[in-house]
Length: 321
Image (tube, rainbow, N blue to C red; front, side, top):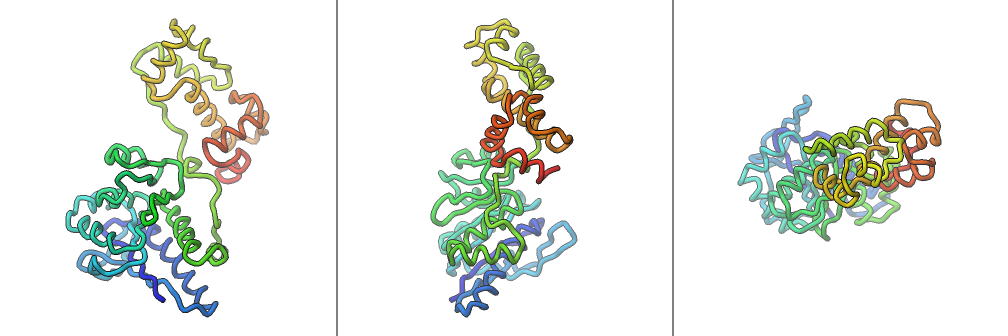
């Protein structure tokens, strides 16, 4: 049995969005053949008129013409790249995606290829993700989508999947191999390609510390600056409200309105970002960093990291130092 996989090509496609999933499915086909299985993945990169596809990194892919949108497909992969927004403005291409998706058993977006799926209406009312730097834009441009900014990949329905930035397409492809042929084969492919079978944490750990929007109101802006300058101080709401000459209730409501985040959550985010910098830029121990950044204990800092970033502080330090 042949499982047909079509990867959409367009000018400015991200090379790794194409080659990452392609290597996963090709390696799976080799492993299946070694096991004597009469099944494989048949991969094709397809573009309008079958033109070569430039990537912007010195590579150019040879492509087949787009297949008839009525042809049955096992997987349609929509990669991302710098050219994705131009591609979303091509009505002929979006129309082909929309029609081909009806014939595909599964449709997969990689990185900001989610914008192609969204423009074709495939993500309406569904949970989806994209590269961490573009989750806000995806949510703004397509408000019906439930954007998950943390997940490495999301199964929005039985047929539609989306993945986060670039290499997350590899994580998603391994999940599809596991769905088709079981955990053992997926693990074999991951080992052969020297990959995590399931990468720890979400994509927030790869994003830079968030720049906090500045409040319009001077009193709130001054409180923001105080929190960021001294993350290790207690910063209790009652004390912050008193310093802003407001009642705690009014201060909390105004702070949330001006910054988009409640005071307690804001303080925790600032402390987390301060700890992230300390973990990658110093040799200080976990208790020292936790105390200096306002967590009180290393265990509290660990729980906060796991909840916000999906990984504990020691693993974050090993990965990003």
